Image 1 (cartoon, rainbow, N blue to C red):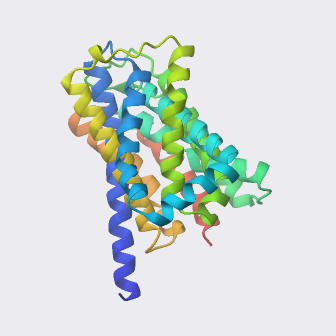
Image 2 (cartoon, rainbow, N blue to C red; image 1 turned 90 degrees about the vertical axis):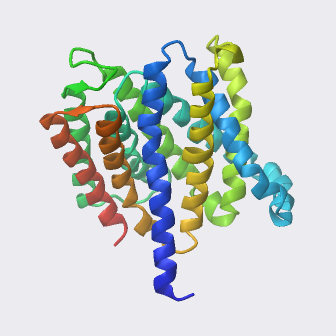
Image 3 (cartoon, rainbow, N blue to C red; image 1 turned 45 degrees about the vertical axis):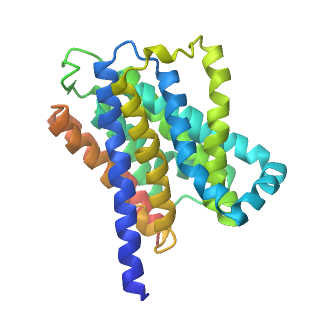
Amino acid sequence: MNKGNKEWIGFLLGLAATVLWASYYPAARFIFGTAEQSDPLLLSIIRMGFTVLFFLPFIVFSKKRRSLLPELLKTEWKVLVFLAFSGVVVQGVLVFISLKYTTAARGALMANMAPIFTVIFAWLFLKESISAKMWSGMIIGFAGIALSMVSSAKDIFLNNSASTLFGDLLALLSGVAWALYTVAGVRIVRERDSMTVTMLTFAMGFLMMPPVMLIFGSPFDLSTMTPRLWIGMLYMGIFTGGLAFWAWLAALRFTSSSKLGSFGYLSALLAALSSMLLLKESLSLLFLISVVMALGGVALMMQQQTK
């Protein structure tokens, strides 16, 4: 296979993952908008369970990956526990709950600000340098975030008078958690099989959820699960979880991570477009300006990183 064909395969796989991830936001918003009594923690553990089931065959039917499991659990368990807690439990739960209190477009924008925090954490913990251009991008990005939080919001579940600040902050914090996951996972993903690492982190995150539910008094009551919720969790666990991660990891075999980085901006824009079409979300001029500023700031930082 020539280089051009490989690049196209990588592009299409990356695009597929991005489209699936973008669908997460309107899907979660629709679920919470039509199921007011649904428990976010119960839904989260069910969604994680479906994702683990998706990844399981990749491990079970691969002798190499099966043999790697004991070694990883013995030598890298501390890193895996942190990745599971930050990237699966905290990030997954926060962004999920956020969409009960804010719109899909706003949640997608906030969560996709993770690259800003990734650069900051890489500077703090990995001693990576930050250029003046990257500082400029961060300032512009944060200004865009601040502007978006004061802009009005409206969709089929929310009117302009309702505040989305709590949901916006939760989605933003989910981006912080993902940034921690990214920085902490750099070494292990580069040195080990990424599919095995991803499956282990989701499995550990799944096992961490019962104690989290117990702490917050969330009952494991499956009788509250309607057919619509089961279908929603199946879609989000398999498609926006397992299949999207698989496509992204597969894309990295054919193209560079720097080229795939630009898809992060597309995810936020696709989420906004789909929420406009499916949830009748109204995007104010102020919010659109904030989107340009926030994503433009991230793009400026990423451009500097990939040179």
